[in-house]
Length: 590
Image (cartoon, rainbow, N blue to C red):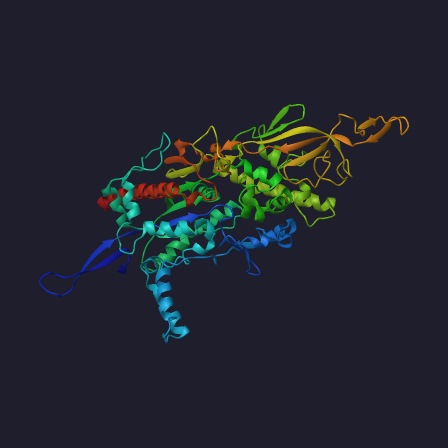
């Protein structure tokens, strides 16, 4: 197979029955180049330290997060220092399985076999040549050049490898996986979808008109999503076109496939940075389109999700707040105004409930520092301020306020109700609404339930004078699912109990057992979803997009599911059919 601009030449050797002469028949087929860019979810991109170049966060294997298990490397102070958006950047040195890995293994086996006289240098040259000569690498560049090393291998490695094989075969023919899409889909689209995602053989054959290399864009998920969207803009409009121009090929537009936060990155690019005309279509998986209440609950009690997320972002409020209090990206996952009001409920011990926000989540919850249920507890922002100096706490709070006003609120407003018109969406949902499996239980509301606790003892019955926050807090070390507050029920007096003993021993002996207090506990998630994104946020309004469906899928592992991959493939084909129609119209006009 040879290259010439957008043409692909296939050579077939034939042997006529009349003689043994081999004749070469060359069939040239022009292919249009349509890169597919994959955007990972939060924590799905590898990060390194800008100054030292040392890795900060990388998931090449299940053992990659082990250093965070050590308290000296993974406490709140260490997290604040290491996971700083201003000191970190994307690390593209992660695990990548090259397209020629099988051939390279064969070369290594032969080169190191007994009796081989190949030098190390000669063997390495053969390996390099094998990689260079692989049809995928020769045509699209290596997978590392296309950014595959910038994302978590254990989350996306197998998916990317398989998906590239679905979209490009070295034979030049379409894959058996694509051919199988003539069958009925394994899923049901939502009513109102503008396409059926069912194809004929002739429609699938148009895939032979396109080269579909997968590119991957890792991004700094600690930094603002707007920064990541600007990175995507550069990739789509400058980097990729220049990359293929060197190969004598042109790129008009791309297709974008996203996971979770990656969907918000793509949305900001297409809808706020004028990128819509550079993108043929967007496929979104488990996007928190209006935010996720889990972003609130994890700030208050730590991360209850998978152990890597808990061990890195934080397993309690102290560790989470130390990182998120300085990181606009994760804060932008908080529920926006579009999520709706009343997603936070506080029920006191008497059974009376209040719900928030009533009209403004930023003012009432995100920038509120005077109520214990506020999202960000000021004394946890900076673990380096161990003496809780008031001036330092106030300065740290002002920085956090700036993040909410400048990055979170503005970001939410700029993407509100906006989606690329050619968007395809899948989200997670348990099919059994009556008995939701544990792995799909999701917070759609956060509910704190209060109760009276009799006999509470504490060295400090009130918050210190320099405490910024609710002055009724009794124990600032509570950083999981409970918060204890003083109550006026007994006017702060000690609760007394009288014990009557035999008059020979003692009479009317009285002793103190402590105060009566109020304790609030965050109730478990009860709604349907993917464990992170509830139905109300994952179910993007059908009138704004092309197609939508839901499947029982876990948030982190969404693209590991066969049905999710099938939906994505069908969406890509559907997009290509429209591209092909536009190209034919343009050709006729010319």
